[in-house]
Image (cartoon, rainbow, N blue to C red; front, side, top):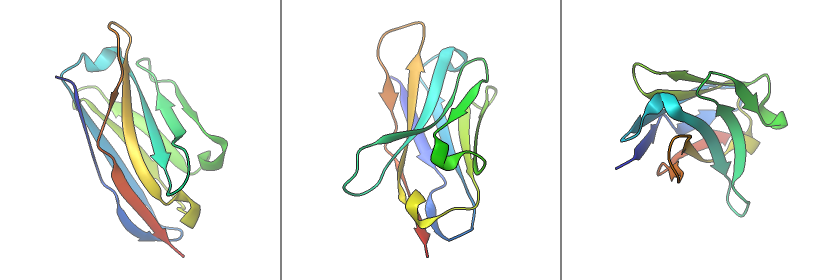
Length: 117
């Protein structure tokens, strides 16, 4: 079955950096568009960044210039490099895969990112 496993979250001070990883299995990785979402306590889940199967990227305005999404096809892994972190980036971050060759979409279990002020 399709599995997405995130890692790399943790506690960091304002201005620090973290790199999240999402290992994707059980699907043809190269035929998936992959997103990073986040959900802060009491808030709706929001789309943070997307990397398409062709390598195109997009970001929500609040993270532009600070976050970078990338993918490594050989490792079947998507990364989210987060720099200059702010307390408002505190959330659970989720990986989300959207295969283009079949129905359905898939979520990871999430990884907690906490930015202290």
